[in-house]
Length: 440
Image 1 (tube, rainbow, N blue to C red):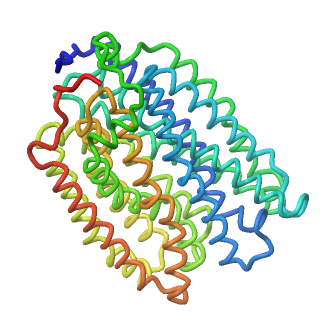
Image 2 (image 1 turned 180 degrees about the vertical axis):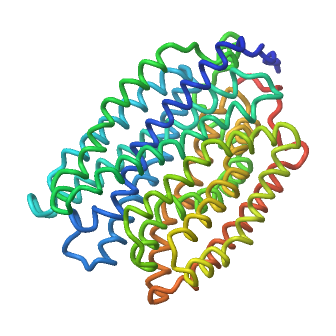
């Protein structure tokens, strides 16, 4: 017969803060690892692992390998989600962190195409797949630990610190790569690019220490005590929440394209199309990402006050309006300062309005007993279509335009419209999960 899972009491304020800090720091480490690959794809891997192609074709091939990591993310999301809903959120975060660290260090040790031929890019793609698998399991667990430990009126802000780990990881990755890119070209291409990947080992140790010292989510504990765990959470999630999973995918499109436009593609666009210095473009990305570490929690806190719907929809509309001015202004000015200003607007002001409230919105869309599986699946599928292919699509569109960015804004506007529609529907009254559930 039907029964109700009681609404659990949130953790103490001190434990909630500790969990949020652990999620933020651990997620920062994982995204540092993930974004190192994106930065290296734009600046290094085309020459070291795909030298048989032209410069443009090599960059597209490197971004294709970059996309491979996103393809593995739903697999990681489903597997980690299954055990996260069955065993617990905390333990899955430990495994994802170890997997990410090991694959990242392995990339730093890989021989290049000149040393072992075609096996080099094959091994690179395999490492990228492991990275994608690990980060696919990371997001859902980190978000749910933060959200489920916090009171309802602060859940937007709590979940946003996991989101803030993404630009924080980008800052670390860009700063590390930027610092070593100032080495003489021969030194950088022979060994300097490897050091940021190898440094991941130390960061993983720090993240592990912090994550081992937090307690399990109270909502998962309540589900466990009430006998509410399901045998196959992903099957139940797809059966009970099919529309919400599809809406979650749509919600991801514009935020991911927005992020990778500035975080990854702009490295290629700024150096090849605008002719700016590599180090200057890296500084631009690092500054914009640094500011976003602050603006993501601010946008999420605003969503706690006025609602996720208003904040998220505003961000999607602004991104569509931003598409043409970003490229028109930069191609007219051809200036590092102007690129910096437009990147700050895009990444530090517009993107947080979507990305800040996203984590908690997804948690609110699914019942606790399948939440890890359902939220991870929707988010990671959205990551493929919005993030994984974004640098590849943008680079290909740039190539079809002969170096002109005129073909790019329609793509950005299209994903904005799709996200606007998905968020509008997902936040309709009655779409949030119910605490009532069936015996299974």
